[in-house]
Length: 316
Image (cartoon, rainbow, N blue to C red):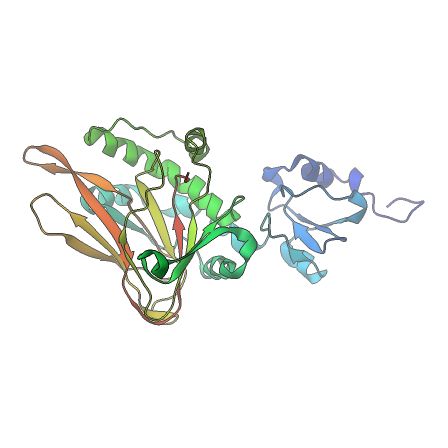
C-alpha cells in the first residue's frame, strides 16, 4: 500500500512482472482484473497492458468473478478453457496409431469434459471469435452451417492443435514414406504453421459447426492449400440422445476395384475422432497403394448438434 495515495502498489508485486512479460508459465497461478474495462485476464494476455493503478490480482477466476469482473475474450481465463490440458497425455496413442493404420480413423474418448464442451459450443454466437461463416446449402455442402475461427484462437482450440499434432506427425511422416510422397512434417505445430505461412497459407482453419433438424454434411475432404496435414480431429460437443438425435459422424473409403466402405464413429459428448483428411496407405499384394477417404455427418433428426473441427494446416 502506498502511504501517500492509499493505493495498492501493484508495480512492487512480483505478479506484475509476470503481467509485463506476458509470462505463460504464470497462467493458472493467478488472474488480474482491470477496473476500467471490467474484465479479468491471464498473466499472458496479449491485450494492451493496463495502467497498474487500475489492476487488482486474484487467486482464481472465481474470485475475480465474485469481485464483479467478467472473463477477457482474448485470453480466455475461465477454468473451462484450461480443461484440455493433459488430455492428450491420457490417450493411448499406441492404440490410436494401430487403428489409424488399420482403418484410417481412431477414437479419442473424453478429450474434453462437459463444461469445456459447453464453453466451446457457446462460442458460436460470439462474432468476434470468427473470420467467416458458411451456410452449407448455398454451396451444395449439405444443410447446416459452420464458422471458421479467427486468430488468436481460443486457448482450448490452440492447445488441442499444439498437443495433438506432435502425436500425429510421426504417423503422417510414415504414411507419406509408404505412399512415396516427398512431404515430411516437423515435430512441432508452430514449425508447421511457419511452413504454411511461407506458402501464403495464413488463415486459421479450426471451425465450429452447428446442425439443427434436417441438417447434414455431405461427404468431403478438407484440403485448403499446398501444405495439407493428412490427419485432422473432430470433437463432438453435444450429447447424442439428449441434445440431438441422428447426426452420426460417417467416414467412407474407396479402394481400387472395390465398393466403398462406410464406417460410423460412435461418439459421445467430449469424444473425438482423428481421421485421414485425404488418403492413407494400404498394403496390397503388389505393394502399397493409396486409399481415398471422405467424411460427413448424417441427417440430424431432432435437436441441435455442435462439433469442433481441429484442422492442423492453415488456408490461403
